[in-house]
Image (cartoon, rainbow, N blue to C red; front, top):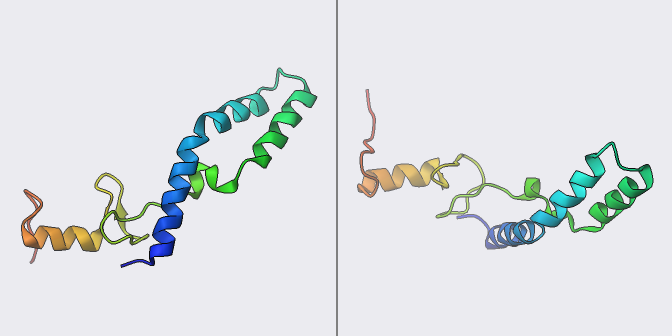
Length: 101
C-alpha cells in the first residue's frame, strides 16, 4: 500500500488539472500562435506561469486504483501488475488465467 499522503496529493493534482485544463489550453494556444504580436504572446506566457504547477497534466501520476502503487500500472485497467495478478488468482477477472510452463 502506498503512502496515503502521496495518493491524496495525486488526487488533488487530478482535480486541479481538470479544473484549469481549458484555461491552460487557451493560453498555450495564444503563446504558440506566431501571427499574434509578441507583447500579447508574452502576457499570455506570464499568465500561464502564474497558474499552479500542479494544474499541468504532466504532473499527474498513473497510480493503481486499488493499492496506490505508482509503478507497473496498466493504463487501460488502472491497476498495478501485482493487483492484477492477485485479482486473477482469485478469479475476479474473467478470462485471465495464470500462465506457467
